[in-house]
Image 1 (cartoon, rainbow, N blue to C red):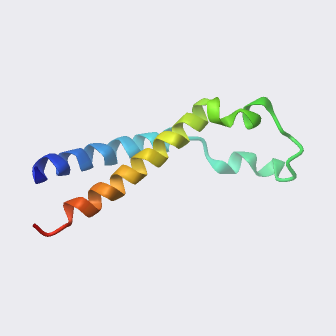
Image 2 (cartoon, rainbow, N blue to C red):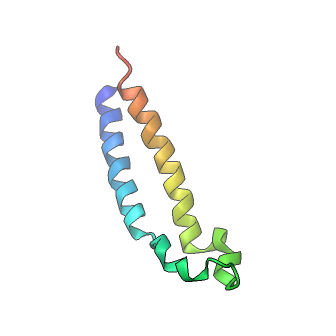
Length: 75
């Protein structure tokens, strides 16, 4: 069981790395700090590819930390 969890942990770590690298940098929006440039993609961020990647990242991070704790519980 511990071997399976370790393999799953490594797979999640690799997928998490790929998903984070696919996301756009946050510095791209620094010119619109005032909030005046509200675009269609800004309003519908949850339905865009960027919103989807953020949701996937959150789920993978939670799974990563839970597995890290479970793997390190002394048996």
